[in-house]
Image (cartoon, rainbow over all chains, first blue to last red; front, side, top):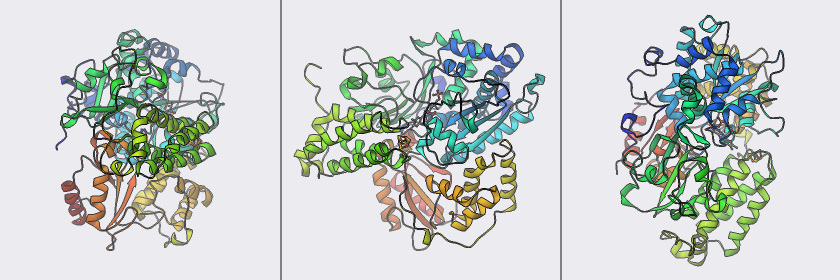
Length: 459
Length: 177
Ligand SMILES: Cc1cc2nc3c(=O)[nH]c(=O)nc-3n(C[C@H](O)[C@H](O)[C@H](O)COP(=O)(O)O)c2cc1C
Ligand code: SF4
Ligand code: FES
């Protein structure tokens, strides 16, 4: 079955393309072509006509929210950065992209490396940093080379190094790889890793804005957040804020995976309906092989799963939209989260128990091991789910999972523990019948899958 | 999380990095502020692994000398990150993604197909020392699965036929790096 990959030509995709408009221009990965197509205008504009605070102000006005998962307003984060005299401050770009279901940052960096570098220069200027880093997961080694090549070009053109554009502003930009560890996407673990250590998250406070890299004030931002600073500075924060709905402004890259007819990376206007995103001709074109949709995890593996009847409609019967607010409508009971935009779709042939076990194994494998509730809890969950999936479980196991969950939740240094616990809770909440069927129909559960769940009466 | 390390199996002759890699190490030291050269550690371990295939204790001690840090600081890091091979591996290491989105599109079948084809289990190396099979957690290619990575190169949209071709291509030296 050949997979029809998301058409790489954004011209044929609906909606504004603030980030990936130029992705198909031949040679766009080189400085010259990128520059000819309007590249580095935001650096010119910021350095020549704006103060650092002006840039921060535009980002605030844009309403941009962190694209790495938590959705914290970027402008506000920037204004929290401590600025003690005589102490360097750092901007670190989080290119760890390790949340299962997410592969958008990679797409940006592979195709438009200069967009990220331009965003890093403009953002570093706004924050007053003279040395900035891109921390990229070690498995993206070929992208590290793409970025290093582009950075060398930017140095040669006077956009990096000493006295940029004759302004007196100096900036060095470096790329540093990880070594394969999901936890290094968490910002304090990332900082530890950048210091050449194990990726053990730090206890907060102090927050990185006060004490980050080498004990200095540090801002950590996702690749897509940094890239979005470019159109925000070019066209103004107000223009950016006009796209989207309410507090979900601008465009968002969505990584679509699973059993879709056309998986891939899409740039959407926030506010697009989930229905159109999944079934629309401009987007995923529905399910692969004409199957029925069973479930969807809209924001990467750490967010709650939605059963088919809550994917395109909220519990209140309204259209579900691709926004921070609409996707979380109903809290964890009937909603989910936009997260990193890792949109994973399941067809009717998929087994929720198996998938829940698979993700539990992921978190158990990736726990850094510092906190007992996370280290032990994730591995217990994995074992119990393995038992259930393989027809060796009992009904008590389902409650046991809920108990382990409660012991992890809120009792750990970093959010990985919660990220492991909540999806299990959500899966049991919506698919309890399927979990129970694995216990009551042990043999059958080894030969076929449960199929679609029934919509609860009165839901 | 990695649990147990059998240190007895992890020795090899001491070797030095090539002049090109040593030049790269020196360049990396200039990328960070004075005294923060430990930051280059992960990158240097990658360089060492590319040249030596895996990280023996001797290699780690050598890296410690290069960066003027304690050997324990290198062991701590090398044992934490999953990309580093602490045991000898085959010439080509296939790391197949086994996480959710890839599983939805058939990574389980790909893994067992490779096992059958190479007559080894996950974690093992073929007798001729040509291939090691490992599984990996999400490698950031979820929409392009099933996929595997071999020596920093991705192979995506895998089918059984494509895997067969890939194995032949690696055997015949087509992907030498
Ligand atoms: C376990 C864990 C993994 C994370 N992985 C990533 C990641 O791969 N990429 C990323 O940008 N943010 C990741 N984050 C979020 C970061 O901690 C941080 O919030 C983010 O980089 C901030 O950037 P933003 O405000 O631009 O989103 C992760 C968080 C946790 C708790
Ligand atoms: S919650 Fe888990 S991953 Fe986070 S610090 Fe604790 S043990 Fe490590
Ligand atoms: S799940 Fe396989 S690459 Fe992400």
